[in-house]
Image (cartoon, rainbow, N blue to C red; front, side):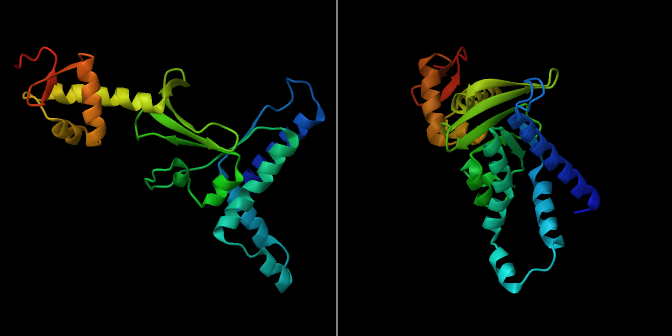
Length: 234
């Protein structure tokens, strides 16, 4: 970490501290902070480590007491900000990155150990495919209901729209995928063929095909194959 990086990270930390103090001091509403956003947390963590490395030599007993595992180090990175937010009633958002894994639990995708999510009151994990304007925000925390919502970004306005529950959005996306596949294929297709073509779970696609058939969105032959309504098959 360069001196320039340390200075920038320190400036962010000082700004958050001043914002908390302003909120506590009873300034006018227009001047008082309503939230603090620190971006990104990796540099703040590096600042803490740099401070520890630059500290004066300590006795062996103190060094042993300070020795921490990676989990404890990550927890210690969040703790000062958690205390700052709690003491001052100031919402604070720490921006971090996800790892390259594909864990089913969104919290496990946060880069680092569980010490980061363990110290925070709430975690928000944004999941989005590269180049896509839509994504899912997974919300987990002590004082909030666990849920996942679908979001859509508008590049023209810079605004993000809440589309509703992520599960409902995934179903609507799968519906569109099914229609595209059936439109691209001349012959009717089985649920297994459709699931393989769009890369989805067979059971969920079989269920969704039944729902679409009942709503007359698609048609089904006696042999269980599906085709688009008006395809002319018997």
